[in-house]
Length: 439
Image 1 (spheres, helix red, strand yellow):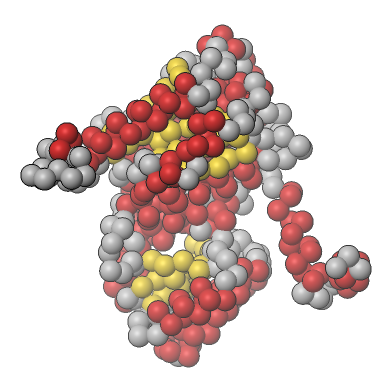
Image 2 (tube, rainbow, N blue to C red; image 1 turned 90 degrees about the horizontal axis):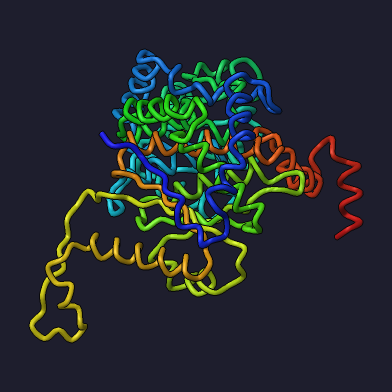
């Protein structure tokens, strides 16, 4: 089966192949740092060989738990935020029927929206449901609030003993509030590895369990990631993760500070959300880093297209191009032709979409927007696994080229400290007094 491919020839004259090749040595060093765990943040490199380390027995166990939840629940609420939410959401949305009347997995804990939580509780009123709660600590505010609400609701519905059979915790091996709760209540648990950060955790039970509950093939997902792991371990011209990391850093140093991830298939919307966290949290530090953003074309051509075509030239695009759609829809002929579309009658909708993509890429390159293209044969578990690992490996390489630690996230704590102070959390008395002087 074909694999994903990368093309970086249409860079609007901003950087040359020679300028990209100038990053070869530092990219090679970055790969060796990842492989030998010698770079900054090396204690968080568990993702690097995760696909090849996952056993069939582990996959079978996750599938068995997923089947138990699926067989006994109308719906399962996956509670988590950030990397404990986005990876599973990305895969499930990419593989799901957009107009299915119900989804087996719904998500909570990714926001503090009172209306959202109220509406979800109302949605669950006449349903038997289970909970997958995902948190290293169990005290992260957003998922902790959601889990408290849904656990209480489930226990009122079924009684504590029966509810416990429908709760699965994905958490730390030995410490933290959620681990303590799980051990006390006897919930089924899975471990979040200490050496895998949240944004790299989709191929651990964090992502695999909600994906399996939704009915998708996690073995194929892991196999796709494993294949990409094998092809990106060594430096060289055929290492597409290395090529992507080198190209984007060359563009960054040429003044292209914003990367727009573009897709022409709405199934990939949440994949872009996952990608934004991966790169934003990994590279945005020490006053450095490409700003990651995303658009859904051709929808956003009617809102963002003008700015991309003629706005400030600080951007480049990485286009996710899907070769084959799953379905066939042919445009009919109309005898009156009042809409003027008979010239494309008999063509598949996907052919029109591909010409929109090609025309847009040419126009944007002509407008001074460098264009990297990643071709995906089709949207299935195997290719999504490849794509996930490709971006993870490239992120590590790119971060080391940038001379930052790609695996920490010190900046995400700032808002939490302020929120805790404003909520007058015990232990934050001094911070509460200080912040109240500012408001």
